[in-house]
Length: 619
Image (cartoon, rainbow, N blue to C red; front, side, top):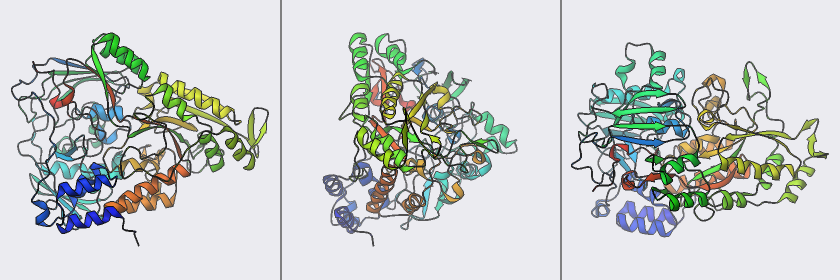
């Protein structure tokens, strides 16, 4: 039986109409439950009419100063994205850099506002039980679509496109990176040209996962594939997608530069403000910061993974822009490969048939975790606590979902003792066991902060008898989405990798897929699925999978929180990955001429999600 805690009692009072929505939020917050969780409860739970009398203000898409503007009058918007885009098709993208490129063109039915509330994008309204969009058993969601929306090629957007998207994503032949998120959807039915009905396999508080957010929920046009060679259209979409968003791709240079022009069929005639967008890749985070903060040559710089003291210096000396960040919900983490990347089976390295002879041993993973000086990394290379503290939990920065059960320490002596007891004997400078040397390949993307972090970690690991081979791959290649590229992080042909990942919704169910194998290991990155599975560590744990399967089938918000904590605890206590630093969800540089309010940086969406409303500071 599931224990009923304080939040459950408040939840029952809300359902019974004994407290108002505002009272529910106040009490939930006092219990440490995050605002996003409480807002989702309000959107999914049928409430007695007495409680519905006091309406909660609804988040809107920030659009300050756009009322009297003219489309394109802002000229060129210049964005430096040092991890250059390799594709611009979200359902085939494996890295944030490609989701960013796609988000100027493609749109979901529903988006997440910065505070975690859901707001309509292609939908006319967010479905709830109160407005009749959600069934009381949470098995169906009926969504009304905005009327008069056109694709960028002038064809009308209809419910048939939503149906087609579902079919395309779930077709294994397409190797969509969104497939696992859409698996709970058993059918999508067009009730009319402007109304669509989703049916789910089980009722769930996270029913919205395949519907909301630009990461997994974007809609694609049926007519583009109809009567055409499907593979050829998909390949064309990688760099020249058709969307309903504010921009269309004019030119695409893979791993270099994307030029966008305003979508003349965009539904809001006075938007976008900028006629073109120059999304330039290459260089590094440091040079991007200089170009925005010091010289003012560029308008915007994404992902400033640069030492905080250096950013402060650029701001003060240049005076051309400022650095902004969101709360620390991301984690810079070390990830262990549970398959052996040095052995090839039927043309596939890191095959599930060959376990990693070193990292399959929990004692080795625990010792490696103990030998990482997280505090030095956080304090010297990042902001340090509280903005970017040493990492602890995988699910971090989300009140009510963060585990109280975990801890970390930096202890070289203890790490050596664990390896001694596990039979990894020290012979000279390197340990070995049963003829296997304790040597590891450790890769990350090119970035001065990451290279400094690698050096700190290598120093600790060498003190416990581990031979470490460091490697760096250009970020545009490391995070590329092309399955033919053997250097990508999602193929993971190394023992250890380090990079950052982030949740893409306030109840981050898709985030937890990184450790989920699924039926027949379909979500594990492998040759058969073109390495599209989110689980690139090849970690397989039936206990973890059972918790995930329960999560996507629960309607109890308190139980959902327990499941998030349970999955986090497995990953942390089994040393599947080691959280080095809890990083700001977004850290970006913006020119003084741009209006930051309309950027609306969100931990749940690609940073350019609101680019239709970006503009200069109104005079």
